[in-house]
Image (cartoon, rainbow, N blue to C red; front, side, top):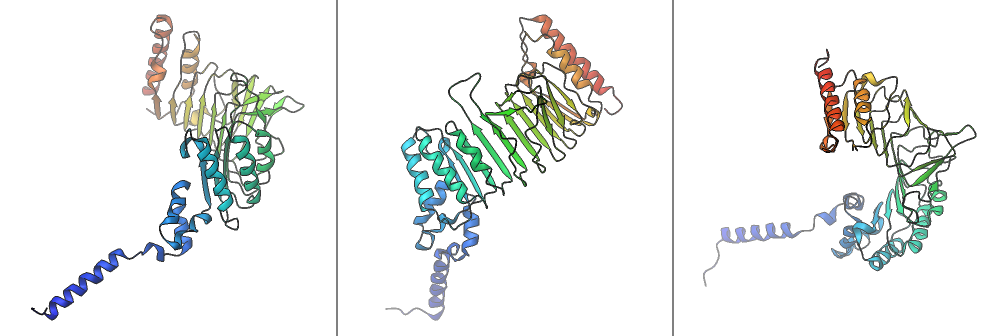
Amino acid sequence: MKRRSDSENKEMKRRSDSENKESEDRLSDLPDCVLIYILSFLKTENVVQTCILSTSWKHLWKRIPKLLLRSSTLFPLKDEKFLTFVSKILTLRDNSAALHILDFECDTDHESELVPKILNYVRSHNTKIQQLGISISRDSDLVMPCVSSCLALTSLMLSVYHIRHVVYPETIIFPKSLNLPVLTSLGLVGFTFCGDENGCAEPFSAFTKLNNLLIKSCIVKDAQILTISSETLDSLSMSYNLFDFNKIELAAPNLCTFTFYGKLDQEIYGYGFSSVKEVNNGTPDKKIYGSGFSSVKEINIDARMFSEFDKSPMILLCWLLDLANLESLTVTSNTLQVPWHDLRFYFTFISSLFILFLTFFCSPNA
């Protein structure tokens, strides 16, 4: 038998060492804090699955600071599996580990069983939670007392979908006394804002650091004016709200983006538009105005026009003509899809846009 030469032995040893290095589990050698940080970018169900990789990973998922528990994406149309999964997560997770982010959505028959468990878990970690999202349709009265205890929140998204009434749903009252000192982002779906003795509703005055505000499917009660006042507000979105009152007073001097979808029956006034750079608007039935429209630079229009709203094109035109320093204008195809059977409406709308374009391109800033 021919003996291998020294060079051949060295080559084989080199290959063997190379193969061992390739199969070596270098990832597990990283510190736990680094692994936890990496795992926090994964979905919760994928994080749990890593427990089978090795013995050192068996309990690592229990310390992840983020929980994403949404029935629509986790186990869609599988209520029992979602109930079991969420219950086990809350039971097996390491309670000594900080929880920074929790996003819970439940649209199942087991909501009444899961919501109290989730809220109790939030209370037990209320000093560390920074981002909280809750989307439910029942047991909404339990939500606000829990939220008010989370003083470290920087982001809060609450959606309460009520299935009893579609047109005028029973909504949860947003408390006037809610104090979240470091909150910068707030989203509310399905809430009621109540007015004071002067007939004015001002639900957001306590949030002194608010940057982003979303209001969707909300109601104003016992008030003629909804006031949104914030020195720090950068983005405001109002969608499909049932506002039965006269005016929206907007005082947000640093507002850059304003989005409005739905039927606008109220006047919006104040000095909140002085720094707006982007506006998205839907179905404008009244003129939106303020003392600082002249500084608006960018506007995007997504307006659904209907033939019965005869004045909508002219209202939209008058509103846009106030934007003297406009640099960018985007009109979606939805805005241009007017009813062909109503020629008077159609030509009024098109002529309005034509006048707008002439005004825009012939201006000194064009």
